[in-house]
Image (cartoon, rainbow, N blue to C red; front, side, top):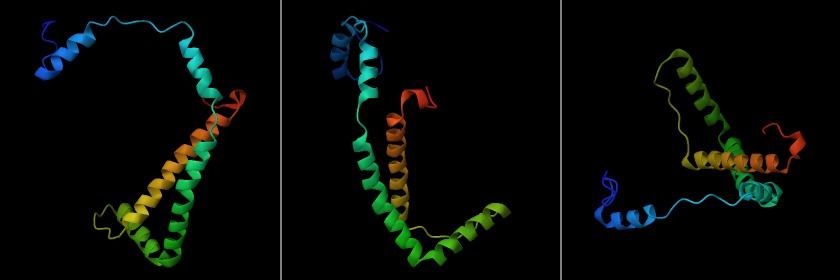
Length: 131
């Protein structure tokens, strides 16, 4: 690779910017920078994460409960078809899943991620499982 031209995968208009950025020497972070950042991360409040988790999960769970109450027998038939096809090795399982149902399940999963992070962040350091 030629220093003046830069990497071969750069477009001609990107090469000048690469040359300018490559000329900047790397600098070490100030002493204690990582520790101060980690202290701020640990000391932050997680109330907003609980709020976001509730805002995502509660309407989605209400929708899923309504779907189950209205068409529970269809859900049971679809699960029976899928389990039957999986156990016999056949590929002819027949079932229908509404797009909003998939979206509601995905939103509940995202809410669980927010809630799990908030729970781990609010747990005292001495009681954490992951270090």
